[in-house]
Length: 488
Image (cartoon, rainbow, N blue to C red):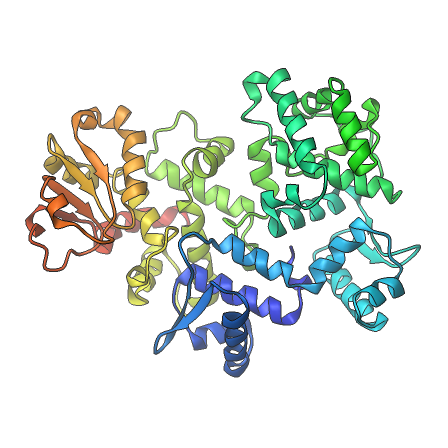
């Protein structure tokens, strides 16, 4: 959801979350400068946040604020909580589900018509600022008018950000529709059953049904060619009377085979995972900082080429599938977010290079903050430790043929990295007993069973310190000095 459409206090809150997520710990003065508010206002916002968004909390050290939460909660859930507290989001969603006049909506929500008009103006001003051919209008009732494809994409993004997969449980019949589409995909496209995004299909159908029922549905121009994967999904509707029945019973949506392709907007977040990832406003790309998909794609491509990642092809689909779907790897996105923020918001006095960026990271103690699973340090080690000769040679010189345990925050990532890369690049590691664990409740008797301990954190007063290989920030600095020309 576009940040500018939220209430002013929620816009500030999203900005606060953006910066503390990127930097882990932020000085209150930097926070005020970025958000564009006084320290007093920010302190009140932080107090309200800590009272209203448990278990998330903005904790203060003497000079810095950092975001904390239990490990079983994610930042994505926090953004969902914020959106669910927004009257703007509730407004734009409600006018899709039901036909309201302006006065009716104001009465139902115990507010005034003038407040609703101000809310509508905020939406329309945002659309105009972003050059989007969209407008919230009041006649004959409240709805969004404009380019239909963009309207549907706006609602797709809204549902994805506000509900995620839980959307299926919000409305009667959607779980049954989802299950039937899954069955049809498995029966008719067994080789592609893992490629088709059934959730997105249900979401697109739901939005199309609501728009059609409001009589604002417009078909696509005949000049557009229907893509092959769209035709494949269209074929599903020819094979199931049960699906037809479910759509009519729960959505009052009558499928006409000749126009089914119009349900699926072109270039929308649908069907093919790479297309879905490319267009949705996912949390890897921080659009509040102005970062575009093209920016990140260029950075990612250069990065993989620089470290000679052993994939068969360096192509955009390969990168997206490898990063987000196959390996669940997020390194280039987090690095780019932080680098972009540093270059455009913090480093205003001298040229920005990768070297100056990492100097800033070291000086601000970024690597010394409390560790979460998405920490910058994880991704640094995850890719670089086995992708450059100095690291791989150092590791191989002490591992073979010993028993090794990988500990601490990057252990699991590094472990799976080894599983991926050793078969091709380091076959001599295939006989090594490799295990990954945690420093939590460290059992030194367990460590005695291993010949080598690899970690990125010091083992203070450890009786087995002579076994430890510790990779620190300084170990990766030289690599980045050579790499800086690729992204500056």
